[in-house]
Length: 227
Length: 227
Image 1 (cartoon, helix red, strand yellow):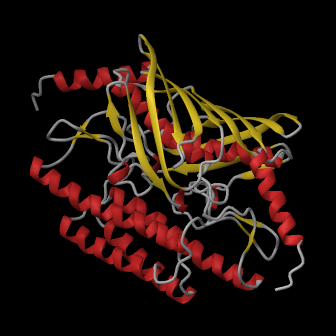
Image 2 (cartoon, chains in turn cyan, purple):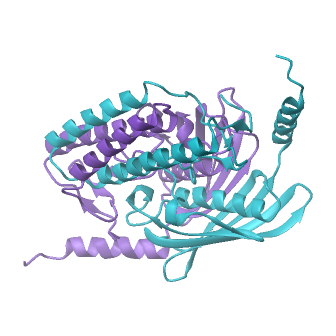
């Protein structure tokens, strides 16, 4: 498994832009396929044909792959490309925070307006409680970073105040306090009527193992290359 | 959006079994496609052809759909069919707890052995902290139900003790205490060396709105049908 924090993305800036466009379209198409196959009521015979077609496309994609973890790349523009990320990844069909729903940073936090469809369902008609936790973890982590206290989740507490309906939602998070490597962030999800449905509090810290990994990587990059 | 807790599944028991087989295979194929498109390094021209093929398959699936929430069905065998569920749904490609990874109930809790691939990544090589929260919410909820205290998540607290690597993992949860409609459940995720990586504590309650919805539904079902 890949454990390095930084791996440079391949290609020129122009190649990266073009690759992102093509991969982004592919993933968006797969995301729509995921919903269609959940909601579809077409005949079983046709579903079996479609299944076989999908298997053939998977074989084509698998002819050349990078196996294992996707990792986080750094682009030619020095921007972080966490394209495999489960919540925000350009190349992850599961990512709910994409396109119009992207998380936006401000001086002391982050927010997002988004839509969750049936793929994010738990109880009938409602967002899965764990999905609320998933997207709040990402939002609070980004809020910590936006407020200057980037880190990994150390503790996350969620209070479920009322059901979160599938559909149009919003969420926001803000840095509540900072002390050394620890940042406390609070946030919530609101339904389309503006009611708070889930409240969250997170403690974000840069743990020792992560600081060591980053230091090791920095040292490696600074080492003269005689090869 | 569908808010009823119970909707009977269509078809005879045999038709349901056959439908589950076909839909389950379709979703499994889509799940493999999701990973393949993330890891694929085939040429951009071919990716664009594959994207167009996927869009055509989506169109075919969308010719006949049940829009909106998927809901929870009750089968001819009276078993709950939460097939849209984000963590365990037979028809949800995002569901991590499927096939060999299914959550198993015991007298006072639940457990699972599973494998998380790059689709569940957050930091490089590691499981997304929010994904750990997502799957633990489902596990703890099932543990509450297994222990006789079924409910919705009221509060969920996660302590991240060490990084959770992608790959083979296990988790378990148990009912710690019950009082009236409230059940406290504890649990954790372990890495393949048996180290606890994330600890969770959940409060599960059957909230008033859910009790009312269920009562309403029960009353509706008992009402004589003169139509």
